Image (cartoon, rainbow over all chains, first blue to last red; front, top):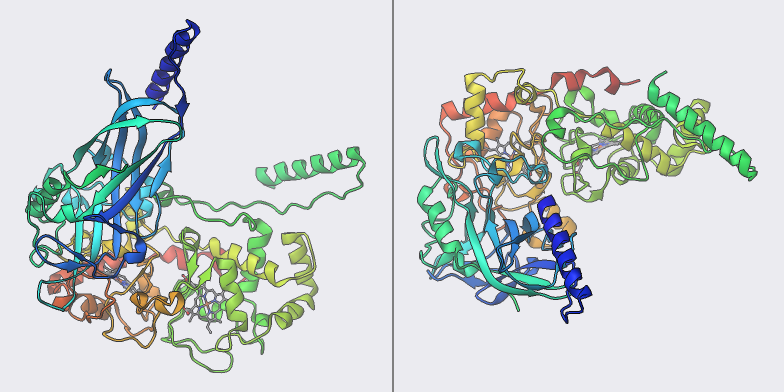
Amino acid sequence: MKKYILLFAITTILFSCTKDDGVDFTTTSTPITVTFTQNFDGDAITVNEFNNLSYTNAHGETLSLTRLRYLISKIQLHKADGTTILLRDYNLVDVTNATNLSFTTTDNIPTGNYTLSFVFGFDEVDNQQNYIPLNTVSWNWPAMLGGGYHFMQMEGKYTASGSTTQEIYAYHMGTARVSTGVFEVNHFTVNLGAVTIAENQNIEIKMNIAEWYKNPFMWDLTQLNNTLMPNYTAQKHMQENGATVFSLGN
Amino acid sequence: MNMKKIIYIILTLLLTISCSKDDRGVAAVYVPTPAPLQIPQVFSDNILPPIIPPGNPQTLEGVALGRKLFYETLLSADNTQSCASCHAPANAFTDDTQFSEGIDGLLGARNSMPIFNAAWNYDNKFFWDGREFGLEMQATNPVENPIEMHNTWQNAVQALQNISEYSFLFEQAFGSSQITKMNVVKAIAQFERTLISANSKFDRHLLGTYTLTTAEQNGLNVFMDEAAGDCFHCHGNPNNPLWTDNKFHNNALDATFTDLGLGEITGDPNNNGWFKAPSLRNLSFTAPYMHDGRFNTLQEVINHYSDGLQSSTTNDPLMKNVSAGGNHLTPQQKSDLLAFLLSLNDTEFINNPNFQEP
């Protein structure tokens, strides 16, 4: 963090020097807000739509959500010169309890052009740390599965295509266990592309839940609906499908 | 006299001096002795600090008064019942009956609840259905509840006011000998917040001073394995040693509901049959189990999760094997799971002399 503050200070000084030289170039810095929204192929999802079997996945199951939490870390802005600004070390988005749906940076960010990236879940280094706020909300991933933390808990009911019987699903993601005592990292980095930071910029990071079920792996919820945590192939399919889940809002 | 007390006396003196200097003629503000909760290491290592309402800080005098009031039968209409009648230390502050008898011999429809680590109930929702917010508000309920102490607050406060010792103790705790309902519940809540249980075998295992037996270790694995017991999503884990998430779930006890639980409070039918997940500490002292005390033994509880799950429209998706009736544990897994659950008993807690009737 200190590094970034220093960087920021130096940048500010550099720019103020240019300004003093009478060059017509001004820069300001600003707190910015990052907001996390969820949709199902464009249908906005909030906790008010929970429990309704309103969504149909690519494979044809109709489903509801009863609980949704996911972990985003290393949310960073990158400048063309290769420098980065860390906006937040991690954020547990909890749609069910409507917490951390957005955050505002404590540091001011210089306005200008950047690209934005984050890690879905924790990388292998961060996943070894002890996060008291995450333990407090029982976000831990069992030691026998490699430990650390959940990356996502997405739960609800579904009915198979042509059926009215409601079954339950629990789509939980975290470290993948290859075999007893052998684990494979399962986070992924998302590059959301160009963002322009203006005064009090609000950046929206959208999650399209439908993508968790279709691209590239066509998810059959009637087969893969629970006990997915120790299921190596299911964990890897989640990681693949996650690549197209996120995008920037307008 | 301890250091803190001395500091506070000095502070009080300073305050008095500055007041007289200002010549406002204001008497010194009385400050009871702060007594912040002693946070056990297994908690400070893992979870956020406890919730203490700003309007009711922990003090030595407040806790001592609260302890006396918790055991005070004058709070009930016929002076026979205290909080401890249904919340006894030997039972980790619950009782051993399915439904507790109030002063009129009436039974409720719910099992009494144990009281410990309540300051770490971060959402501050109390009762099986979470209907009361905060321990202070919760404590206003039993005194007037017709199936419990069936008194009026006016009566209860008057009965206390008639005893000069109480005037003195309230003066000490809150700076006023005039007893109020608010100060009664504040004192009780302060005492309840001191009821901290964090010295089970498993806690000592976390601190490195106890080695789990093979059965206890295997039982922990059953508890933490999504393909076996799968208990950890609702009942904590070694990094959340409260052993509850203090949230509401339907753990598939019934196909239809007589008691709607959380649904009754929120009015949302999706919450029907949802109850607060209890902590799994001290289970040996808290039988019978569940909101209606339907199970007398832990074997019955384990059999419920293994083979007795009932499907309903409001099942928590975390009860993953509900359509198969349970997670079908082997006899070995069941006995290991039991051994692990028993490692969460804290006998020091139930025998703590600071918690007994004063």
